[in-house]
Image (cartoon, rainbow, N blue to C red; front, side):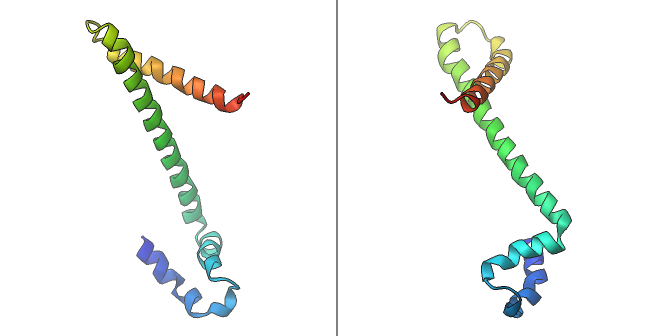
Length: 103
């Protein structure tokens, strides 16, 4: 995909008088010529951010359940999946509240 964008940018690179700075070539091309690709780029950035946040919350809740609760109560094994979901919601709400009300 990046090779295709580079090939499409070749006329802009060979005519540098169009742009005042070389770092403006790619953003201008994406916004003016590839509107759908721009929307897909924004969607990809948001998807990566949501995936990263989900992985962080899931690992935090899983390690909290395993390290704190299951160490004290080793006979309770069915709580592992439902407890992780509940702890995930608790951690998410706590993180949202912490970020919304910092003081």
